[in-house]
Amino acid sequence: MELSKRQEAILEIVKKEGPITGEQIAERLSLTRATLRPDMAILTMSGLLEARPRVGYYYSGKTPGKVIAEKLHRIKVGEIKSVPVVVPEHCSVYDAVVTMFIEDVGTLFVVREGGLLEGVVSRKDLLKTTLGGQDIHKLPVGVVMTRMPNVITVGPEDSVWIAAKKLISHEVDALPVVRPAGEGAKSTELEVIGRLTKTNITRLFVELGEGN
Ligand code: ADP
Image (tube, rainbow, N blue to C red; front, side, top):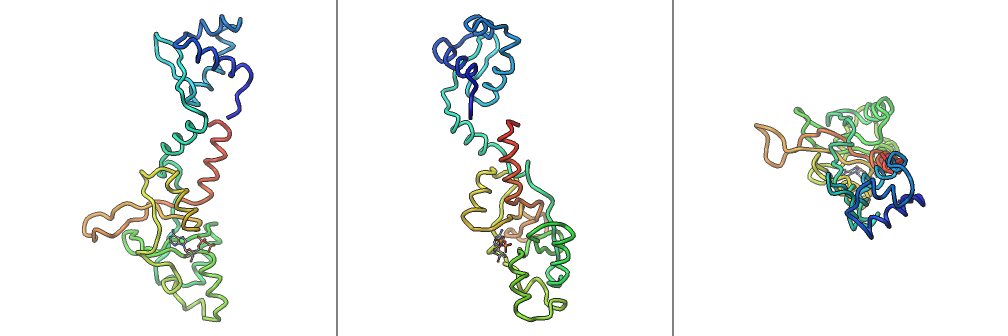
C-alpha cells in the first residue's frame, strides 16, 4: 500500500508517541483535525493504526502485507459468489453450448433434482466433444463432464483466499459453491448454491485496489 507523505508522517508520530489523540497529531503537524480526518480514516481502515475511544490512536504493528493477507482471509466466498448456471445430466452437448452463450458463462454445473451436484462441464469439455464427430444433439453432457467425487468445491463460509488457492492449484476456472444437502439426501451429497470463478476473484482484486 502506497502512503502519502502526510500519512507516513502521521504513522511515525503514532509509532513514537502512541497512544495519541487526533488533536495532538494535528498539533504536531500544525494542521487542523478536519484536514487530517481523511488520512486518519485511511490509516485505520487499512489496519495500520487502531483507534480506541478516549485513548487515541496507536500503531497496530502490522505490515501492509499482513493487513492485506488478513483481509483476504476474512472475506468469505458467500460475499462474492455469483449465481450458478446449472443443467441436468441428460442435457445435450448442443444445448449446453447454447446455455453457455445465453448465460455468458464458461462453466456449467450439472445437477439433479434439488440442485444436487453431479458434475462440472467446461468450455474445453464441450469443444473436445465436437472434435470427436459425435452427434452433439444426442450426446448428453453427463458423458463429457467431470463427475463427482472429482469435482473441486468450496463452501460459502470458506475464505476467498482458500477459493483462489483451489482455482490455481487445480487449474480450473470455476468452483461450485456448495452446502451439505438437506433432509432425505445422503451425507456425501452437496447442494449447489453458487458459482465462484476467476472473475469473482479479479473483481475483488480491483475493488481492493480501489480501496473499497
Ligand atoms: P476450460 O475447459 O474452459 O479451460 P477449466 O480449466 O475450468 O475450463 O476446465 C478444465 C477441466 O477441468 C475440464 O475437463 C473441466 O471439466 C474440469 N473442471 C472444471 N472445473 C472443475 C472443478 N471445479 N472441479 C473439478 N474439475 C473441474
